[in-house]
Every structure is written in C-alpha cells, then in structure tokens.
Image (cartoon, rainbow, N blue to C red; front, side, top):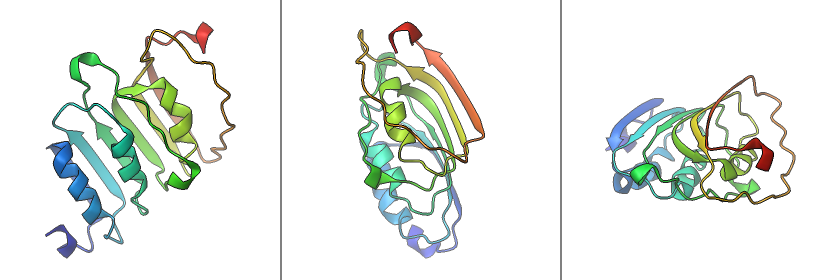
Amino acid sequence: LILQFIHLEKLILDKIQMKYLRKMFNYLMNLPKFHSLTISIGDYIDSLDLLFFNLFNLLTLKYCKIEYEAKNFECPSSIYLTEYNSSPIQYLIINGRFPFKSLNNVLCCLPKLRHLSINALVHCRDYFEIQDLSPIKLKYLKYVALKFDCIRFDKV
C-alpha cells in the first residue's frame, strides 16, 4: 500500500511495534522523495542495532526523530555500525536511553549531520572501557543538545 505513495516525503509513526517497523523500512527504501521520519516505538526496545541499521539504509532520509523506551530503565545494547553504513541524515533527534558507548560509532556514520539532540545519553555498565576513538569530521554540525545520565567524565 505504501508503495502507491511515491510522492510521500514525510511520515509520522506513533506507537508502532518493532515487528511492523521492520516491514515498513523495506517499503520506505523504495520511495524516492521520502526525507522525513518521526517514529514513536510502542513496545520496549532491547537493541538499537537493527533500528539504526535500517534507518541508515534509507538513502534519502534527512530528518529523523526517534522515541523509544527500554524495559525497566535498562540501557539498550550498544550499536555497531561501520563506515559502510553512512547515512545522509542531517537532523537526528533521539528521545530514549542512548548508550554513550555508541555515540562515536553513530556519529562516524553521519557526515552530513547538522543537528543532534539526545535526551538521555547513558552509561550502561559499572565500568568504562577506555577505547581509542577515531576522529570524526562533522563539518556541517551547528547544534548539539545532550542530556547526560550516569556519565562520569573522570572515567571517559
């Protein structure tokens, strides 16, 4: 049905379950003018991997707002992407517990990012793994809003 809307540019999905969202991404990939997606996930999310992998495969997406909840305030598992998952997203708004450990990885895949907002950047374990972070070039980035939850900067 959605493939009949070839001129669709913007879509808002409110309280969608993950099992339906997976199918929706397959259709959205075929819409040439589609550029704006707002998602509110209706069930609890355990892993962000599949969600971000599918979002980054939408090659015309410029604006993305995601809202989700983790079960019992748990932290969703980390996201593992590669440079091959590069995305054209320019505006990324995340309303949900987002793992601090995944921030560098996600930013490396967003070379055109202009606006970033995360309302709960969290440390998910009782330890910080010191890692070498690759340099990120975000030459278009103009706006950043981050709310920290349980982040100890003396350990970062």
